Image (cartoon, rainbow, N blue to C red; front, side, top):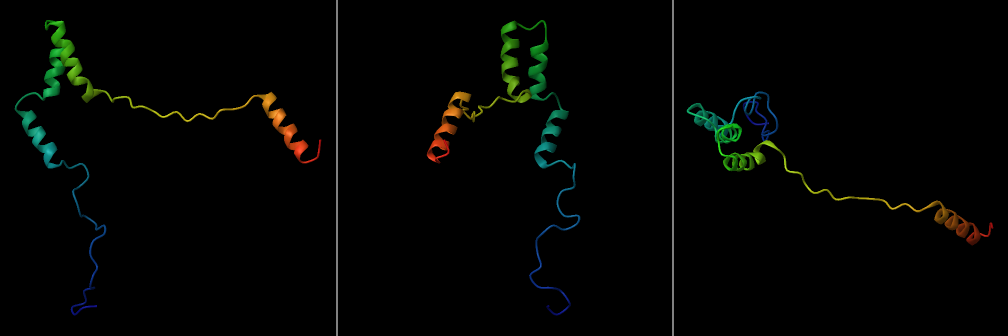
Length: 105
């Protein structure tokens, strides 16, 4: 212990009330919301064009393609792990071989 009653070397770790409060927005989110207040977000603009019945079909398709990654998750490849099973005849043959090897058959 040091003079004054303070413990030496006790730093770090979780402390009550430390850090950003839950639900508060970070700088990037606040900046985005600030920009959005002046107009539409790019994604909203793309979706508006895509849904506009008077827009040319080609433009609507291009907007749908551009907006899709922000709305739908891309499917990922999955590695298949399959266990090959043997038939009943093969199981019986193996069992007979083990019994014969043990001298029980």
